[in-house]
Image (cartoon, chains in turn brown, yellow):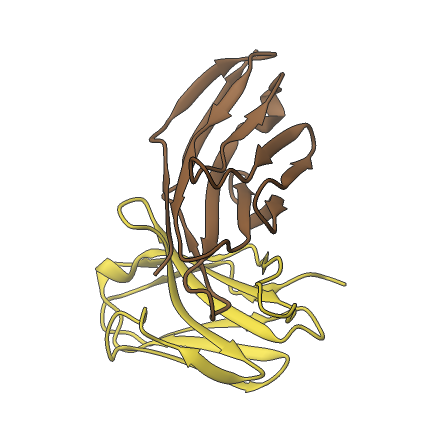
Length: 113
Length: 116
C-alpha cells in the first residue's frame, strides 16, 4: 500500500522563523496528498491538499507542492506564529482504490515568542 | 452543522469493564472512520464504513473490539473487556464521497479513554 514518511520532531522555532516539515511518499500512481494539523486537545483538521502532481496546496500561509520527481510534499511557512504550535500530519490514501488515509507519525512544532 | 460529535469526551474505567464510545457523523456524509491515537503508535485506523457498511476492519486490534453503524447518523465502538493497553484517544471522522480520490475527513474532538 501507499505510505508517507515524515521528519521526526519536535521542532522548536522562534516566532517569525521559516518552517519546513519534510514529507516523502511511496505510492502507486499519483494519489491526492494531504497535510492535517492537530491543535492541543483537538481532533485533526485539514490544513491543505494537492490532488495531482505539480499542484500547490496553500492555506493560512502554509504551502506544499506535490513533487513527483522527488516523491515529496514538504510543508512550508515563511513566518511562523506562536499560534502555529501544533502537531502536523502528512497523509495519503492507503490504496488507490480505498477511501482510508495513511497518516505519518506527526511532527510536533513549538513556536516560542 | 455541528461537526462530528463524539461522546463521552473522557472515560475512565477499570480493567475488565465494557466501554462504548459513540459518534454522530456530519449529516450527509458517506464515510465514517474510527481511529486510535497513542504516543507510541501514533494515529491508527481501526475500521471504516461506507453507507453504514464496514469496508475495512483490518485495523481492529482483536476480538475485544467491535464497531457498528446501525444508521447513517450513529456509530459505536465497543471494547469488551477493556484492558489498560486500550488507553488512548479515540477519534471518529466522516467524509463525503468525492469520486476516485478521497475528500477531506472531518474529525471529532475525540474520546480520551483511561483503563485502570
